[in-house]
Image (tube, rainbow, N blue to C red; front, side, top):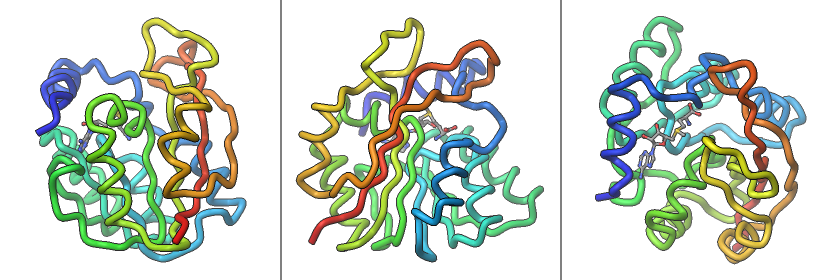
Length: 198
Ligand SMILES: C[S@@+](CC[C@H](N)C(=O)[O-])C[C@H]1O[C@@H](n2cnc3c(N)ncnc32)[C@H](O)[C@@H]1O
């Protein structure tokens, strides 16, 4: 089991979850509207309280969303019910469960940058199982070019290429800023659009 679980359970329990902006991530919308995430089935890794999972379902994807914090998943299920969409929301550690697939599209916002520190090998093995040649993955991760304290974990371009390029071709590596639950807190981020190699 991932040690990060205690950390994230505490974040949701105390309400310290700056990433939970309550609005769909604009960078995700930009990439979808540019037609760069084609496909029908999509898995969101670490869906939190489900804002983006709901948006993805509204846009026509058949969404599976996973998070290991039960409180977050309960909030996500409530959002899904209120929105009247269909999302298969599961509770568990993505590196230690059967996730089904392979999926056409993967999406994570703020999860790769944690999991790479906790269990990179397990994360890479999971990515291999849930994708096939041609699957796309949009990962939104903290950007090490600018230090931000407090802020999300960060990753450098060199680390991204070393860790992800063996399995994925990087189609776009773009800088942007996360939207958070505070208007004046916009930590620097990477938008990493990838396609699974053979
Ligand atoms: C920074 S939060 C982002 C949440 C959501 N993606 C968002 O943008 O609102 C990271 C999320 O990943 C989840 N997470 C981290 N490691 C995980 C793992 N190994 N398995 C499942 N979920 C995980 C955490 O519980 C947390 O909800």
